[in-house]
Image (cartoon, rainbow, N blue to C red; front, top):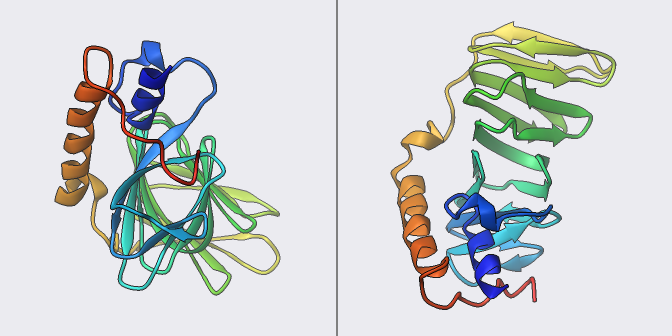
Length: 212
């Protein structure tokens, strides 16, 4: 059982045969001051779960790696994790996903239109939500209507719940997460840890303190 928990902490790298059930876990890699569930992270790397909240402070950022998805939180952002969803409460984030990881921000939803690698950004600044597509297409629900945006397009929601689409999407603030050396360093480190933690390896580390 302890081995299975350890492998769940490294969900992107451990054998799928050990991941049976509805249990969902992700890894977070912090740069600067990052809080989880209202408390500062005790280390730069930890496990987070559905129902957890993650907050980045000024001049800080975080990478959240779930199975098939990578999320980069920009400074001064607050999100809540859910199964298959990330709820953006303020700030901004970039998403690269192969598993149709979706985002909600207020009344707006952003859902990749296919299972191919999709990259998009979502921001909620003072109640103004903006969705920007950088790779493939994203379905956006604005409340009163929905629309689809492709590469280089962006959408905002007006006060009546209609989608306002235009071309000329801005470049990602933090760059492509797949080209982020720090992210890949975390992924490679996680892979090495799983090789040690999963069957045939040593004992697992303690579970994150906010999940006894």
